[in-house]
Image (cartoon, rainbow, N blue to C red; front, side, top):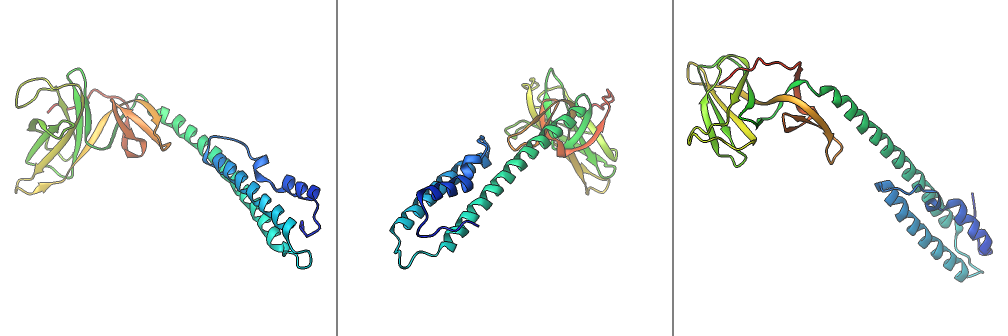
Amino acid sequence: MTTVGSTTSSSQLDAIKQSTNPAKSSVQSKTKSGDDAASLASDFDSFMKLLTTQLKNQDPINPTDTNDFTSQLVAFSGVEQQIKTNQHLEDLLELNKSGSLDNAVGYIGASVDAKGDSGYLQNGRATFAYNLDRAAKDVTVSILDEAGRVVYSGTGAKQSGKNYVTWDGTNSFSSTKARDGVYHVKVVAKDINGKDVTATSLTTGTVVGAELDNEGKVVLNVSNVKVPITDITSVRQPTAQVASN
């Protein structure tokens, strides 16, 4: 342990700076830990200036307790080690992100269902899906634009389980064709007694790409709809067997 006393020379102080200064050994980077290292460097330099000033102006008959100085030097060393640990963790996280994206590539070309209610209308076709917890007597399917306006309303399949809806983009109320883009499906189902049947909407389509979002999470491009990979509920080989409404 290095002890700093009233007779510590300037050369000894320089040696202490060299051995304990965390900033000189920090790897400069654009990561948060790199910023922390730079901040710590400034704090350390300020601390050493204060320490030197106190040593120069202390009462030689009653010198300052050096244990406090030593404890702070040790604390700075501990912070340096923590920053280095954070840098290593950031490196591991980056590797993990790359690995996750590599795994997501395996989804490309596959047909998937995911939590959600979105579908993308393109070239006169949009596909949606929904699950019924039991068979229904009446099923009403509504398709809404991004503003929440209903642009299509019709009947849907009534069997228990997964059902698909395809839409050609025709507006039910004006007979005009809707613009390409993202639309949403809403399903209301009733049984023979008029009671609600639970209908769960799904986003469905073919995975055409994968990317990392701003938080480093994997997002799949499902027929032009962005879907977090964690929202995928089923994966299957591409099939043309999609029921029309």
